[in-house]
Every structure is written in C-alpha cells, then in structure tokens.
Length: 192
Image (cartoon, rainbow, N blue to C red; front, side, top):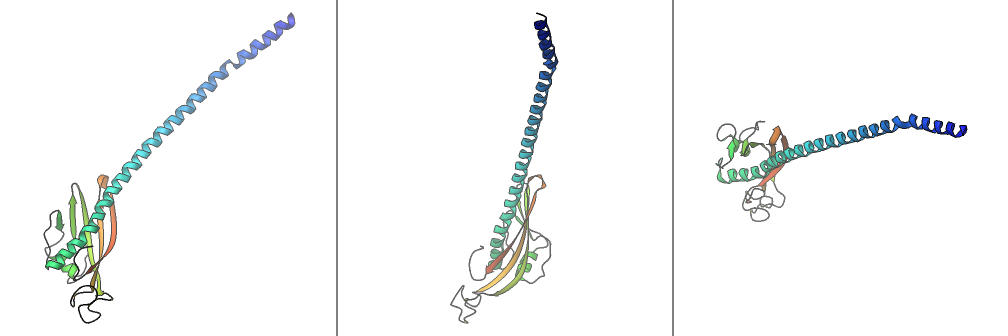
C-alpha cells in the first residue's frame, strides 16, 4: 500500500509540474497567430498602395501616349495649311508662329515644350524637333518623272523626320516621358 501511495504522489507531482507548460504553449501560439495576422494586414496595405501607384502610372502613360499620337496629326495639319492651326484643347507654347517655323526648319530647335494638351486636371507637353529631310527610295523625285512611287509631283517621295518628346502627367504628381520619331511624307494625306 505504501508503494501505491508513493506512486500516486509521484504522478500527482509530475502532473503539477506540467500544468503551466500548457498555458505557455497556448500563449506562444496566440503570439504566433497575431504576428501572422499583422503581417497579412501589412502585406495587403502594401499591395493596395502598389495597385494605386500602377493606376497613377497608367494614367500618366496614356496621357503621354496621346501626345505622341495627336502631334503628327497637328504637324500634318500645319504643313498642309501653311500655318499653325487652332485646335480645341491644344495650346502652343511660346510666341505665335514659333511651332510652325520650327517644324518647317526655319528656326532652330529649342528644348522647351512646343504644344500643351489638357485633359481634365492633367496635361501633356510635347516638344517637337525637326531632325532631317530626304527623298524616299522609289519616290517620284528619284525617277525624275514625278509620277512613279509614293506621292505625286516633285514633292512626292520627300520625307521629313521629327523627334517628339511627350511628357504626360497623372494623379499624385505622376509623370511619364515618351520619345518617338515621326516621318511625314509630303504629298501623302494623314498624320500616322
């Protein structure tokens, strides 16, 4: 009987020594789950910020891209009519006639913006530089007849090259710059 009492006492004592360990393990699990929850929340917040910045970038990119696609049409319109043309939502930067003189090659290129488009609260600034002009292979000028190839008459087959730098703005002060080269073939209608 004495032996049974000693065994019981030994078992009870061992059990009493382990009572606090369950509490410690449970607290450690709660701390671990809390850290995982905070980490997930932080990651979600960062992903939302990244998505917002991506949206701002895309608005600025599409604004700059619209400048690249609109400017050749304006250049063609000005060349076909022999002067700067008034178009809604487009304003010329600098003094009147400067843009036309620059695209014709009369004035040297300056590094300031030539055209400004406005879309709501955002703007697009485009700088146009005439880089070169030359005859296109297969044009009427090459064959000295004025009838073969691209275009008609002595003007057909002559290309003027322009470098365009478009800066588009977007929400949250986002800014995108795009650079493109435009080739205007004289005697051929269209901007692009």
